[in-house]
Length: 85
Image (cartoon, rainbow, N blue to C red):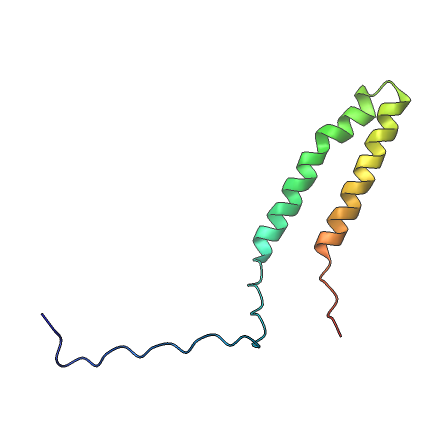
């Protein structure tokens, strides 16, 4: 059961240690838009609580702080990293 007509497979060269890493594949634009819409939808219950259900000032203050942190993290995740020099 040996193949006499087929040449043996050529071995792949080993990875070089000083080779730069490959860039990760780019995300699909549709998936990014879906994630943004899903994130905004998930913020609605908290915003409704702050607008209609929060009777105490501490809850409103904590809610605004958490919303501010979420917006900051979202903007930071959405902006592309700056290239290193």
